[in-house]
Image (cartoon, rainbow, N blue to C red; front, side, top):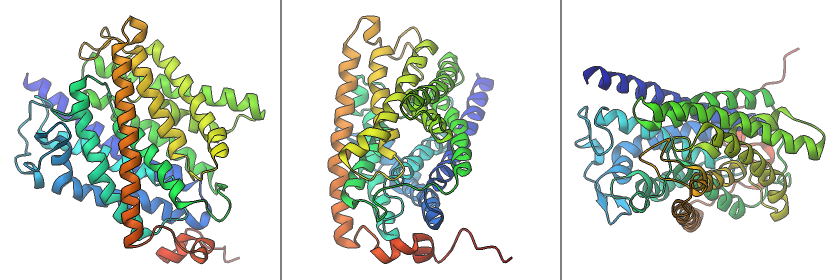
Length: 411
């Protein structure tokens, strides 16, 4: 037993630092997609989120998300400041992991989620507004939803909805909130057209995301067992199929299979498999990943232009749409033969799980939309949301941060 405890601890320590690497990976992924005059401000969003949420999580966030339950909605503040959260395991979450290691693993999810949102408002949001919004959003949107889904006593957990690694908690909340921000901020001066200045940065960022996603999904098993290894296989398979699905549709319609499409499709597949990875078979992950790539391509290429909103780096197109499909797919393809702690989905003869998944998805959408709108309204009244036209024209790097990523050569 002692060796098993040690193995789990090492496993989750490695998974934790892998998930941490996803936020710098996201900074590269997003940074390459913006104009060169905004790369520093865009990457600053990811790194500042690491600073803000790391402190918030220690003071109140972890207790609100995973602490003792209050009416199925949120945790209380018994664990504020990590009171009582030490090396001794908490069997409610894991009997083999130090409680503070579990806390750190969950922190990396809490950091990544608001960082994803930043893709929606890139190149035009005030830095002061971003800071206040990130702190408020993490406290009042992320922490409650994390408790609903993963906290002991959370109402969606009690309902029986399944979310293995964050389809609802991470991707739907961030993607839908990103859509609300994009609409409220309005389009960039360039008319909502993204101008990638360094696709190699984006490609490198996508590779780091794919790598870190193994810690994200596989680590969510919290122990080395057959469920974890199944998640390893399904995660990689869905990423590959997401890329294939995106490229297939893109190649058909535009006659050009792009590298940006390939890596965007991989992220789409990873998002789609996140809630399902520990509950579905590898063959099911092929279907989930492929459809994830297709629907996210449609979201990015057609839905955004049809409804005319400026989701700058497609936070909603990849994460909101992909996470929603992933939650539905879990209700269709989940099997107790893969994970006894799960449930059988629609193709195994039960519609009950799919109904629960739809309730969870609908609740997360509604809470994210209403909550984000209220928080943005508050921030707008306090400091305003958007930079002025001159700042946007000059670029946020120089105007806000007093720095440039690139200097003209001296020869």
